[in-house]
Image 1 (cartoon, one colour):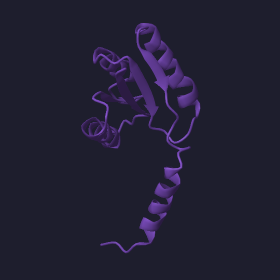
Image 2 (tube, one colour):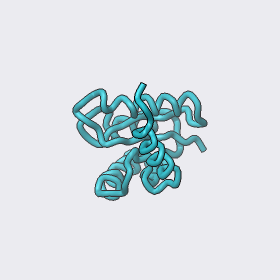
Image 3 (cartoon, helix red, strand yellow):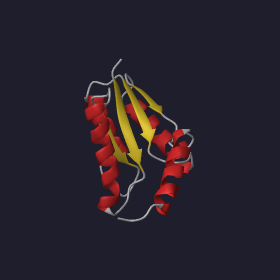
Image 4 (cartoon, rainbow, N blue to C red):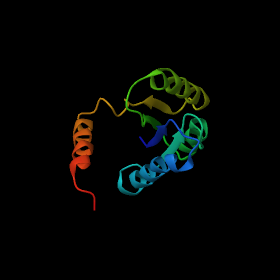
Amino acid sequence: MTTAILLIAHGSREAKANDDLFALAEELRQSGPYATVEPAFLELAKPTIDVAGQICAASGATRVVLLPYFLTAGVHVQRDLQNHRDALARAFPAIEFVVAKPLGPHALLRQIVLDRIQETSEPEA
């Protein structure tokens, strides 16, 4: 089974705000076990989920994980990403499309929050 990753953020009209997702996708592509890692945006930026999903399908993947780069499972994750998953599954019936959990529930996020708080008490250089 060949798995591709579709890394999905909300998207912003401010291009620099989207750069983190592109950088993370490239880092995962270079260092991780997945050759295909495509960034995508729900709205306001490109590539869209549909376009990035087509790229994942064209890569030869038999499974595509839609990974929400979101903190909570709000409407976008529960409804919108599921709708995109369903559309991709209809367009590419030979490929399994699954939506992963958002980032927020992960235990390591607690440490990240504590690190960010600690950074505010360190003297600026």
